[in-house]
Length: 332
Image (cartoon, rainbow, N blue to C red; front, side):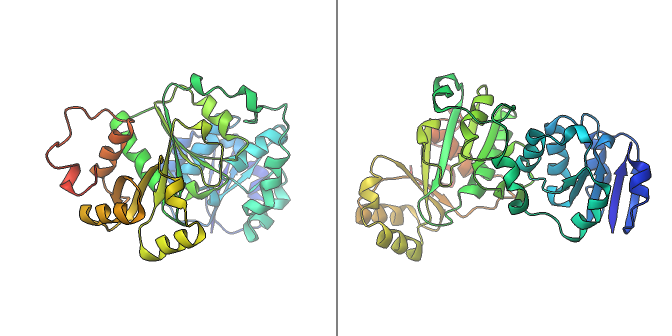
């Protein structure tokens, strides 16, 4: 069953031959719609965008998508919104189902678009439009006031995406505002449904960081992005299970020699301090930090300590100097 939210297109939407469990008419802000439907069970919500206050602002639509789930939304657009830049921006925020044709809505219900269906809209974004694309020479890292911390997986699935999410939550508790997370060339952030997490392409990253130049901290899930000059610091994540380590070393036998000056962080680790010391000796590598398996729904003091170690948070006067870190199990 579906929900219809309409305003100027009420007559057209009422005539649609679809199963409807609830229909509302009027103009609403995003908080009102999220409050009404966050716990309401439905399959798809067909939204006449004129029913959303400030719908021309893509940030408004992004908040709606984050609050209700982008995968559940089908937007009925006005003709004025059907520009290359606006449609590409919808894809940027994870909304793949939209049309200005009332007859297309039934098809989108029966067969929703995937990212592969709409990614061409990003590729064809006009350079003259207000996109994120910038020439290489336009990016000035000195204009960034806060820290830009990049995260890359050394072993497959070492947990960079989830760790960035958990770190962002801890930063928001400590700093409240001015902290953001970006991921490059993926859309995994949509699964967290959390504010201030944005998915960008590799061509958009520098422009997005420049837009956030006044941020206190920006966490970047770099994935395969290689221009590390965008970051003030880069963390390399390694899951220290036997199979992951053996696979890594077989693929790149000299990996630890190459990483000698880098910040290697064990993530999802079951190693004790003694185990870490033995690992460092055997691999001839220095481990920057040891992060255990964590509950992403709980407050994690170890992450606050880790952010302090990185210099993102000021923990002077709050650290247990005798215990070697919170709970006394994290390598210093």
